[in-house]
Length: 73
Image (cartoon, rainbow, N blue to C red; front, side, top):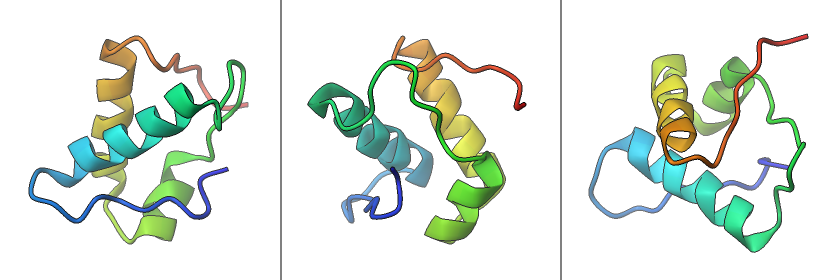
Protein backbone atom coordinates (compact mmCIF):
# COMPACT_ATOMS: atom_id res chain seq x y z
CA UNK A 1 0.00 0.00 0.00
CA UNK A 2 2.65 2.50 1.04
CA UNK A 3 5.66 0.26 0.39
CA UNK A 4 6.93 2.26 -2.56
CA UNK A 5 5.95 5.66 -1.20
CA UNK A 6 8.40 8.34 -2.27
CA UNK A 7 8.51 11.79 -0.76
CA UNK A 8 9.04 14.73 -3.08
CA UNK A 9 12.61 15.95 -2.87
CA UNK A 10 11.67 19.61 -3.07
CA UNK A 11 11.87 21.99 -0.18
CA UNK A 12 9.35 22.00 2.60
CA UNK A 13 8.66 20.17 5.82
CA UNK A 14 8.81 16.37 5.67
CA UNK A 15 5.36 16.05 7.28
CA UNK A 16 3.84 18.14 4.49
CA UNK A 17 5.61 16.13 1.79
CA UNK A 18 4.36 12.90 3.39
CA UNK A 19 0.82 14.25 3.64
CA UNK A 20 0.94 15.31 -0.01
CA UNK A 21 2.25 11.89 -1.11
CA UNK A 22 -0.55 10.08 0.72
CA UNK A 23 -3.14 12.58 -0.55
CA UNK A 24 -2.01 11.86 -4.12
CA UNK A 25 -2.69 8.16 -3.58
CA UNK A 26 -6.12 8.92 -2.18
CA UNK A 27 -7.12 11.18 -5.07
CA UNK A 28 -5.67 8.72 -7.62
CA UNK A 29 -7.72 5.90 -6.11
CA UNK A 30 -4.70 3.88 -5.04
CA UNK A 31 -6.01 4.21 -1.49
CA UNK A 32 -9.75 3.64 -1.33
CA UNK A 33 -12.35 4.50 1.28
CA UNK A 34 -12.01 2.03 4.12
CA UNK A 35 -8.39 1.11 3.41
CA UNK A 36 -6.27 0.92 6.52
CA UNK A 37 -2.87 2.52 6.63
CA UNK A 38 0.03 0.70 8.24
CA UNK A 39 0.82 1.64 11.86
CA UNK A 40 2.54 4.99 12.25
CA UNK A 41 5.71 3.35 13.56
CA UNK A 42 5.87 1.12 10.51
CA UNK A 43 5.50 4.09 8.15
CA UNK A 44 8.19 6.00 10.06
CA UNK A 45 10.59 3.05 9.99
CA UNK A 46 10.03 2.42 6.26
CA UNK A 47 10.72 6.05 5.39
CA UNK A 48 13.47 6.63 7.94
CA UNK A 49 11.60 9.47 9.62
CA UNK A 50 10.34 10.20 13.13
CA UNK A 51 6.96 8.88 14.32
CA UNK A 52 6.03 12.44 15.32
CA UNK A 53 6.48 13.49 11.70
CA UNK A 54 4.09 10.75 10.56
CA UNK A 55 1.57 11.77 13.23
CA UNK A 56 1.70 15.37 12.04
CA UNK A 57 1.24 14.32 8.41
CA UNK A 58 -1.79 12.19 9.27
CA UNK A 59 -3.26 15.03 11.32
CA UNK A 60 -2.85 17.29 8.30
CA UNK A 61 -4.78 14.78 6.18
CA UNK A 62 -7.53 14.64 8.80
CA UNK A 63 -7.88 18.42 8.71
CA UNK A 64 -8.11 18.26 4.91
CA UNK A 65 -10.95 15.73 5.26
CA UNK A 66 -8.99 13.00 3.48
CA UNK A 67 -8.43 10.70 6.44
CA UNK A 68 -10.41 9.43 9.38
CA UNK A 69 -8.38 8.17 12.32
CA UNK A 70 -9.53 5.38 14.59
CA UNK A 71 -7.62 3.74 17.43
CA UNK A 72 -5.70 0.64 16.36
CA UNK A 73 -7.27 -2.75 16.77
